[in-house]
Amino acid sequence: MVNVYFVLLPNSLILDWAGPAEALRMANQALVAQGQNPRFSLHFVSPLPSAPSSVGVVLGGLQGLPVLDSPDANAPTTWVVLVGQAGDGALRLDSDASRTVLHWLRGLKVAAGRLELMTICAGAVLAAHAGLLAGRRATTHHQHLDELRRVEPQCDVVANRVFVEDGAVYSSAGVTTGLDLVLHRISAECGPALAAQVAQTMVVALRRGPNDPELSPFLAYRAHMHPALHRVQDAVSQAPETGWTVPGMAAVAHTSPRHLTRLFLDHAGIAPLQYLRRIRLAVAQTALQSGRNVTQAAEMAGFSSDTQLRRAWHQFELAGTPSDPRLGA
Image (cartoon, rainbow, N blue to C red; front, side, top):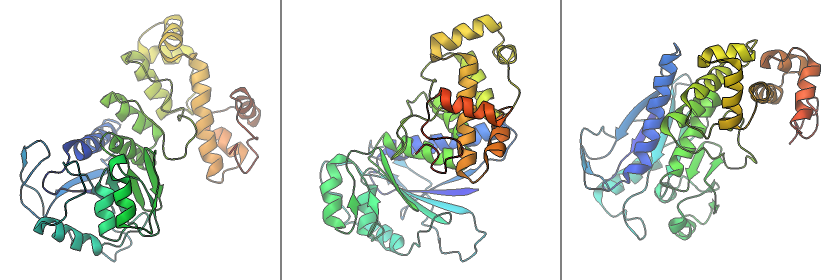
């Protein structure tokens, strides 16, 4: 279980936290539908029991700031999410509520896999004021880049990025990029297939992470709205090692093999078996990166042999070879 704490000050931007919170809720919903336990426990915390939002709606029932200094190594992972505030100037932190949050933040011990920090928009500036970005790489909304540099000169401020990952600290450029960041984190926690399913449910276009050169195959070929085709792609992505055939995929879509092939070509721009090989290749790459040998990676991905894996590698023009420790990097 991951405990996710959204820290809400007065005038917090609703889109900064509501979109990511909905993505996490939908991830839980998808996990339960697959017979798994929900992964994320959402908490909305503040030094105030209620606070006005950026659009004037008052948020009530907010929880108090939690104690997050558990020495137990087996304690659940915690994500602390800091968001931006309404306004067209520098972040205002002169209220009692802001000072209380800053004091609380300064007591956090950020560590990967234990207590991780996520900032959205000017939430990075709030983190910088608390001393949490010294020696880190981070980004923020373009209107706050210079402010972030002034507040924390020891932060390597990165411009023109959707989000930046630095160990246990994740920062996004703001507003809708908070969705990109949380989908990236869902992918890391629950797998790219489930993250893709959440993105499709939300009808959002997925961008990749901070340094990835191309769209993940789990997320590509899905810029369409055809429900039967999405159903097939979900099934293939969730169990690529299954002995899929075009008739088997067509059965999932409740259509004929010929019509399914037409749907794939018209809506996804790729043939069904090509799509399957691309997904299997991504699974094999992940296995190789985790230290598995070529034979093990081929078996895990559903390839019938090492040779079939190597053929797919060549077909999709990946650099290097499956045996190359750089894995085409």
